[in-house]
View 1: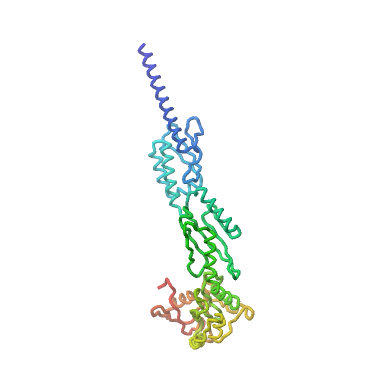
View 2: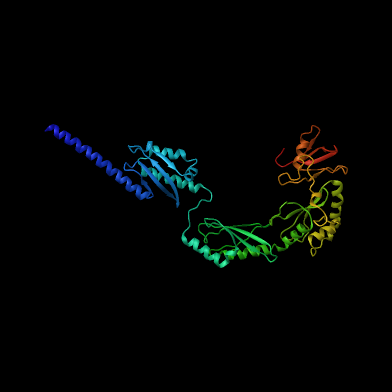
Length: 398
């Protein structure tokens, strides 16, 4: 009788333990279902879980394998490549939480916290905006006209709109919207030589922005007309591919001789800043004419015509000369363009006149035992004719 009672007690105790464990697993499953309803157990033992974890409205696929005793220390985490990339640099934290979490639900909660921190630390990573954000954007674009929209990203955060000025030039404005649009002012950028001025209020719309952008570009119409004439009627050596923000032009005058002009966007018809480049025996007479005839500058005439009158020259044009006549290679590296630079250092000996890139000539002279430096000027000999030649030190070198 006593033996039966003991055996019965053992069975009852064992049954209670099994019931307690089953109840515990049931509670854990309920908690997991509540916290992460997209993660489910794949087997009866509830040792393999698969599904998705949602963080900041982004879904990540995961699979967690538990040992038979359900201890998290021996658990294995498998995740999609997006999560792996996101957790790069956080692996030690995830491993630590696996070691110390009391159960799967606690680990999932901590994993979501880590993922949220990782997402928020990414530049430009934002959650989806409310529906009214998108409906307002669509309404504003319908009012403005879809033909003016060049680009919009998948998150409806970055837009590019085009505008045409009175001269038929095409312009583009980039708008980066904030999460609290329109209460929070967007960021604006455009290819202009002056700061873009857009006034924004909480009542502003894309149509208002477009109208203000047109006012900005119309104010620069004369500036672009000046540069268009230079681009069409002369050989522009720099920049190679001018943008609407570029106010400088380096114009060919002759072989290894050019003038760099800086047009004022606000006063484009006024005398620009000028810098003559080339051998001194060629540049000096031109510089003297520029100084002597500066008073002849007439704001009612075009900038190009004024430069012809002041310098008393005719600029080579696409109708009279080939550009190859002015694209002489550097005498050291034997290339015309070195990154974005073209040869602008010329030997002053009339019988030589070899052009060089500034950086090439600087490195050449610096390697000569006979060269010397005074302040920021290096003195040495021309690599071709051995006549005296100088070059300014290149920025970043000592």
